[in-house]
Every structure is written in C-alpha cells, then in structure tokens.
Image (cartoon, rainbow, N blue to C red; front, side, top):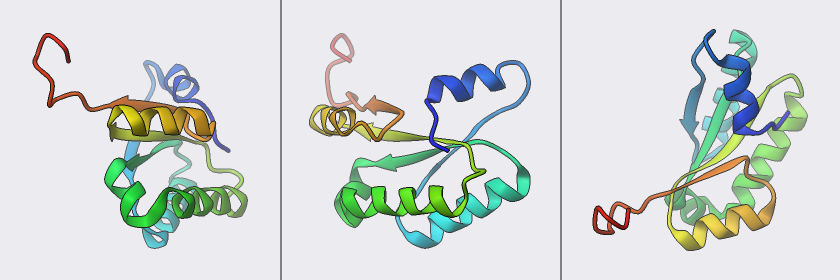
Length: 112
C-alpha cells in the first residue's frame, strides 16, 4: 500500500528507522518487496532522475504498481531522489509520488 512519507515517519517516530532504497529494474523491485514482507518493515522506495531516464518513468511506475498488487501487505512511500526542478514538478503533477527531493547542489550555497 502506497502511503505518504509523512505517514511513515509519524508511525516510526521514536520506535524504528525506515530504510530508503533506490530501484532501477524488476529484480531490485521484487527483492525489495520480498524483503519488506519477510521483515514486516515499511520502506521508502526511491527513484532517481537517472533511473527515470534509464528505465523510463512509465516502466518504473508500472513495476511499482504491479508490485503493490502482488504484495498488498507491503507498506511503502514512493520518493523522487535527487531530482532537478523539472523532474520534481513532473513527479508532483503525476500524483504517484509520495515525496520529492530537489538536488540544488549545483547552485551557489545561498541559493541552495
């Protein structure tokens, strides 16, 4: 079940850590979901800007939706990891991502 990142943090606060894992392909996705079920642990599934280009955002979202159906007991958030401004807006507008993180490290310190 896809939840917001805030929901995961609120539930875990003061009790346990939440792992955040980047995926690029079906094998990583299946391994992550199987491990989560086995350990009964919620997690943050991270997608990088590079993975969205390499695998294609539609393929990644399709794999995640399929894994959510196959493993309905899995509790996780979907997070954009180190996106640029354009990618962040695209993820927000898609309505699929629980959270986004912009990577502004290329800007001057005052702007970042």
